[in-house]
Image 1 (tube, rainbow over the protein chains, first blue to last red):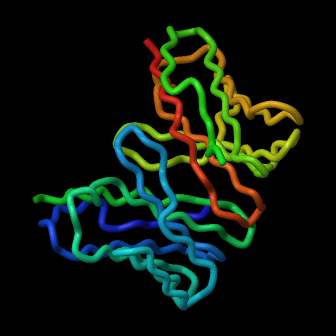
Image 2 (tube, rainbow over the protein chains, first blue to last red; image 1 turned 90 degrees about the vertical axis):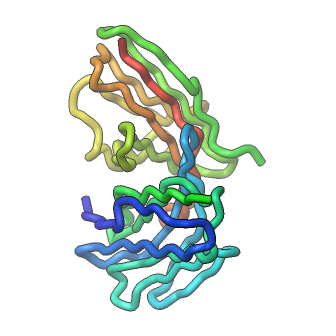
Length: 110
Length: 113
């Protein structure tokens, strides 16, 4: 399957700081999705992106579909303790295969 | 509108036994995906099914693992003769369209003693 490189692997930040994470692919993707997973739970969809250049917000979260269609980023502004979790990017390629990044583990210190 | 339902949430099996994990997709969704997650790791694709058809099983081990999504009833992931290395969380996701977003269940956590 397609290789998705997600970075950083983990982040330790203070409450109130902004967070940025990204995913890159070796091939073009048609869809980028961002999920959050909390301990013991399933991933929850945060943002879906369908067009190159698309910039979408969901509250304090903002995600963009890269112009080259090979990357996407997720920003979290003014982090709060409940932002803690693992954030996964996912991409759907031209074969409609859906692949996931390895995740970014976010820790927010009060 | 109920979400993706998985059961059991937790399953304990001894080596050599069989494990059956069930997934009922969201209403109106005809596409089901199974993923496996080891502790501290990401989601690894196993299999993609539509009703009565396996579309892509490239991520599923060739032996002991099988999946089905019958015309009626839930999708089932079956693991025969389980080994300790099968211990993991197994997540099911469903989608209404081939190109749609995936919605995940809460997962089934398998522990093999």
